[in-house]
Image 1 (cartoon, rainbow, N blue to C red):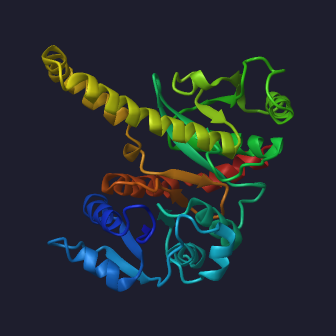
Image 2 (tube, rainbow, N blue to C red; image 1 turned 180 degrees about the vertical axis):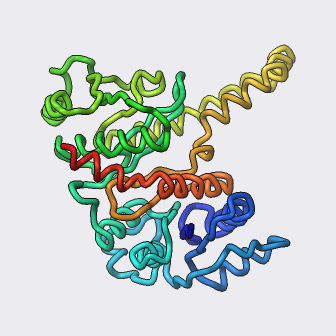
Image 3 (cartoon, rainbow, N blue to C red; image 1 turned 90 degrees about the vertical axis):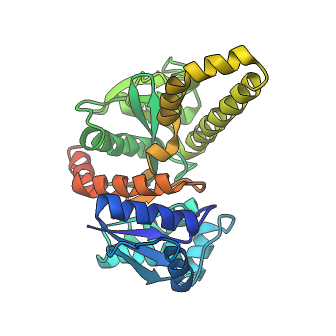
Length: 329
């Protein structure tokens, strides 16, 4: 299996990306293609005592910045790491592509150059959320901020396939994120989507509210990309805020320090459950190819785990499963 990785994308690129690639190549054994400026990437690789033989470099002289407009940048910067990585998928030289760079540019490049799976009208970014009962999958968290109800039905079908074959949930339940449990609550878009999901073959359990995201009430959470991205960013912010708040309350009190020391194993387990780096990245579902979108601030651990996610994507033939489920409709 060959996995291409954007060596220049992300807040901490290229150093952290290369560190994650080296760790992943050693531990997982897949062939890794680092995409980016060869001189820069070779310099970063030279920091490691022994570079695994299963790492190669594909030259890409340009970088699409985080603040650049996606569509314009993809068309103008044809030798960017994102575009070159996409071309590796298109030519069959790589089985999957991972990027912690400009999310919009990745979605745009994938859509323009590879197209969508048969029956899919819009791609969706899916993210795994830790819950009280395990994990749930939320889609969409940023690919499409102005969808139609049919697009959310497609998201549900795609997430259903991913949940079954990757997350191991035989009959995943599906909830629609709204401002109330009643079918009459929400915008016209949400109400129309509810009606469509009710008549589908999905295991639709109705509307859920914001407080249900982490309870594990349903296995799949559907929403538009605007709402999903806000939920994702709020969740990330809460984790950091709680950590800072606890540290500030503990540091000046002896009893609190003692309690924290005794509770350390629990805190470590809790942080691991909430740490996005454990999940690596978000599959971009609906594209006729395999893409994993990683967090801009990804650590080396997150990049290593993103390689695992990409391998799962291919090994479980998720795109084939999605097409089969769509055809059954």
